[in-house]
Amino acid sequence: MVLILFIFYKEKFSYRNFFKCLPTGLTGVFLYNFLWVTGLNYTYAGKASIIIAINPVFTAILAFFIFGERLSLKKIIGVIMAFTGVCLIIVDGNFSTQIFSTNKGDFIVLSAAVFWSIYTLIGKKVLQNISAFESVTYSCFWGSVFMFPIFIFTNFNNVEQGTATGWASIGYLAVFATVLSFVWFYKGVKDIGAGKAASFIYFVPFFGVLISVLVLGEPLTVYLIIGGILIISGIYLINRERQSAK
Image (cartoon, rainbow, N blue to C red; front, side, top):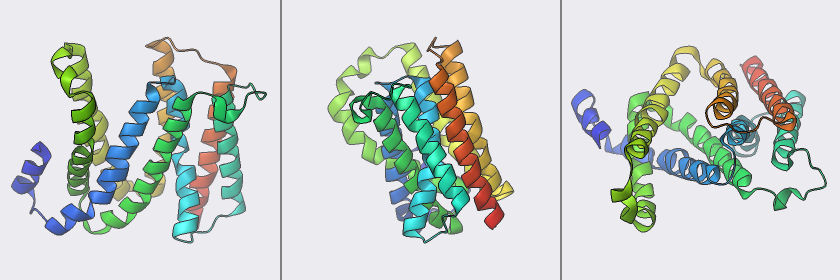
């Protein structure tokens, strides 16, 4: 709501742009964050940060089927490498395990990556005539609208039980991890291009694993490292091919 008021103060409010951002709010703010946070309840944070990094792979696949973008041999190799890495992380090297009988949190996080990819493709169209700040503001508003019923029916009665640390965490997620990160990301896309901006995704799993090990004391397994390398290498091939095509 604060961002909406800021739009009225700094920029001209556009009903057309406001409703154009409904799909991005649904996919990139609501579904992505809801599935991401839900998945974190059932799996390790470091593990999830590597799995979620696979979203460029889904973006490349969806772009092929929806927009007819070329899926070259290099991209196909990248997709295979990334999915191999994800499978390795999910089964934790135990290939005798049925992959669909393993941790459900991993698959919930994986579904979050799919919706982020859908959001990316939708945002590619929406951003053409909308400023980064306007897009983020409207998308966050719609995301909040979709999230509100879940808040009412699940956690509304627990609000008074919230701790100072809990509220501080929510504040950090709202200001830094949502608003500022979205604004800075789209500002980066406009300033240095989508290709260079996308390359910074390689830092997400690295810092995710590092912080989860140092702060949360989560285990760092060989299969997590190997799987992470495969995923990042696969994403590198996909992004490099995309930049070469431009």
